[in-house]
Image (cartoon, rainbow, N blue to C red):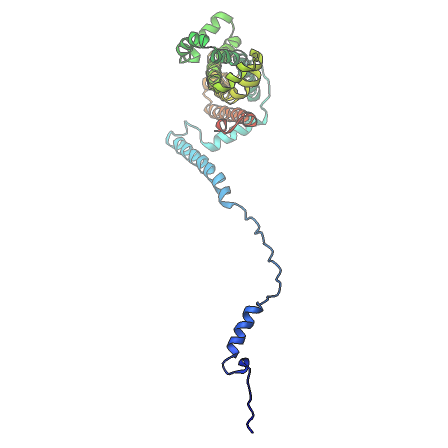
Length: 306
C-alpha cells in the first residue's frame, strides 16, 4: 500500500525567500520613536574684527598726524612746538578755562562761549528768514524766477566781504559779526528748502487740490514732512559754514571770541596756544555737526545720515 504525502508549497525547498519577501511587504519595518534633537544655538562670538576696524584706523590716523607734527617741529628747529610741549600747555590752559583778568584777558572757555553765542544769534536769524523764504520760492514759480538770479549772484560772494557793510550799517563789531554769520548761513537753507519743495510729488499736490485744502494745511501736512530731510541738510551746511566764518570775522573785529583769541596769541607769538585753538575749533565744529546729524537722523531717513 502506497501512501502519498503531500507537501504544502510553503514547505518546499527554496520557498523561504518568498515567504520572507511576502512578510516584508505585508509587515513593514517599524522603528522605535526617536525624540527630535534639540537645536543648539551657538553663542555669538565677539566681533573682534569689527572692533579693530572701528578703533585701529583712527588711532593710526592720529599717530600719523602726531608723527608728521614731530618731524616738522624737529626740522624747523622747534619754531613749531612739539606735540609734547603743546600738550603740557593745553593742560595749563584747561586747568582754568574760565578766568577773567580784564575785558581782553579771559580764559579759553569764555572765548568759545562768546563765539557760540554769536553763531547762535546769526544762525537763528538766518533760519527764521531762510526757511520760510525757501518754502515760498519753492512753492510759487513766480517767486522762484524772481529770486533765483539774485541768489545765484550773491551766494558766491565771500562772507567776509559782507563784514565792512555790517560795520558801516551797525556801527559795532558784535552786530557786524552776527550779520556776517547771518548772510553766510541763509543761502544753504534757502536753496535746500526750495529744492525740497520742488521735489514734492505732484500727486500729493493734486490730492490737496481735489480736497480743497488751505495753503496752511498744504504747508503743514504735505510740504513740511516731505521737505524736512532737505531742510535739515541745509541747516547742517549752514551751521558748518557759520562756525568757519566766525573765526575769521572775530580776527578782524576783535573783542572776546575764539577768533580774537587766536589773533591775540599770534600777536604775542605764542604758537602753542594757536595750535591748541586749532584743535579746539575742530572739536567744537565736530560736536556741532554730530549733534545736527543726530537730530536729522531722529526725523528723517538715510539720505541725511552721511
